[in-house]
Length: 418
Image (cartoon, rainbow, N blue to C red; front, side):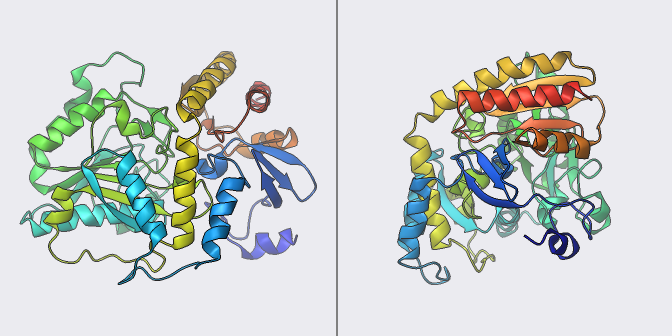
């Protein structure tokens, strides 16, 4: 494999050109393992950015792709439809909250956020709310890398501060300060209530990652925040958008994170694990109020919208998840992560350790030299991708006890040498 060519000519995520370090050459993947060109096998503790919940090379998902490929790989969705899209839409409507009856398929999570924001905006404009022009969201949030999505990511500590001058000026409030397992008090919602009361006439929607803020800082917050937010949005006639690209399909212990709070958003964005990590696809679900409140054509139409291959494997991935006792399995992972990562809290430099569902996070007081840490992890057969001051894992759901033990022990061993 020509790694020198890769470093000189191929731009990898969140990197400079030419590359400052070589990417690892992967030649195959199976189960929870990535196999490198030199034969080394790594346990993937990232599920390929949280998407490959069923692991790699799964026979059920392979079969779904192969079966659909024999019929058609793609057909435009403008003026045409097909069974994989219809079947997937039915399944999504069936497993999400009853009010969410309408589905828009998009290319990726970031594009799904763009669709949700445009959908909310067009609804407001067509309903005569012409002064509504801003979104409200949390600091420490992350919603994607396209322009609309970037505009609702944290403007200071997020990855997109270099583009701040080009982005719309939305309203940011502090991320929820009440942890998932802490005692709730109503003062935690005060800032949101103040901003909605003062600015609701110009706010199109509140857009948040429910319960878990992902790439912005791995903050786990109390579900009551979402309950109160739903009440406030209804009171001030502001739409509520949940970005469940990272949290959907069981990662937090509920099938969807909003179920921790038993509230329903007006618009729900799904992605990542939707296809089991096989192909890029997102889905934006909304209620009849929004869908039927948009009287003119909704002006968005990706070329590869509702790609048949992606829809077919997504339907198979959802069925595979729901048929496999996923709740018991996630609880197993949560208990083991909680037990085995606890020792990290006593290490020098560790600020906190937190676990929710199949997510384990170690927060450090300061950001170390992650390149050295990652090299050591790879040497010991583990693939993780730390960021900021966080070392975290979101392993595939199929990881067994021995594999997860090796993963957590390697994390502890690596951090203990800092």
